[in-house]
Amino acid sequence: MTGKIVKGISGFYYVHVVESGIYECKAKGIFRNQNIKPLVGDNVEIDIIDEEGKKGNITAIHDRMNQLLRPAVSNVDQAVVIFAATKPNPNLNLLDRFLLFMEKEQVPTLICFNKSDLAEEDKLEELRKTYENSGCKVIFTSAKQESGLEELQMELEGKVSTVAGPSGVGKSSLINLLQTDIAMETGEISKKIERGKHTTRHSQLIPIKADTYIMDTPGFSTLYLENFEKEELKDYYNEFQDYFSECRFMGCNHISEPDCGVKKAVEQGDIPKSRYENYKILFEELSQVKKY
Ligand code: GDP
Ligand code: ZN
Image: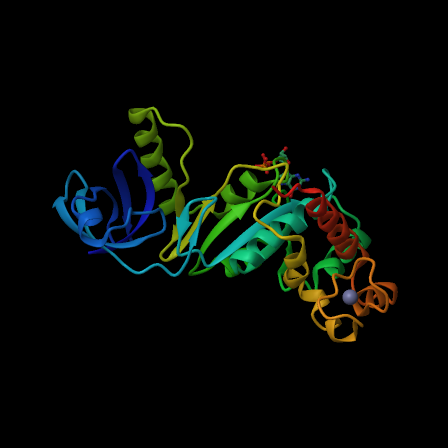
């Protein structure tokens, strides 16, 4: 049978099989045979050892499409990053940092501004405009009024998504609204697992429906751009790409160089100020990093 690892705890892997639920599996022999450690998100073959007790053994791991380090998960189709449109005011510098990480990993990202019920129309429009050419899709939701949920559901459909965002933006509220019976059921199973095994927080995929999974990740309030070179940042800004050719210098960083097409585009309002200003801040930040 084929399933997906939704959770791994101390040598046990919990494998979701769409037709029949979650099996507690060992991965005997896998490491020896394939020389890899199973990862949450892996699509695997299992032999059922005990149908009633829902126990099995993983016999093979399918090839991975990709693999993220934080959170540790494989076969991710997209990231969904949630910020509040207001209350708290979105920290766009933090959002841009998140987008840089995903661009670097080549994971498509959906930006979801929640609490749209609290924000003025102008504010929503400004956010939409700021990210319209970022390469990310932008949607607006209100967990309170349950609006924008169909669109969010549609974007998740049939995919594995990691869901991230700072705390207080309504991430849990949205995830609760997305949970169907199947997700509740596996949630219950997970609780049982957790009680039995004294573990700290482990990453876990929540099955929303057949072939649709989300991974809830802990709220973050800072993201430090480790493993980034300042010179590579500009490559991750979709908005800049059309204007490179108008820079006088090859490899222009669009900071202090004269005759810079990107800076010109910012002045003319073709590139959002917020995106560019935060780019400069991040570039400066990486310039301060001491090289040993
Ligand atoms: P999390 O920390 O991101 O998981 O946020 P929660 O889901 O716990 O929500 C934080 C607070 O914001 C709670 O008091 C929610 O009731 C409230 N909240 C969440 N979503 C919305 C929304 O769309 N509109 C409004 N007005 N409040 C919301
Ligand atoms: Zn330039």
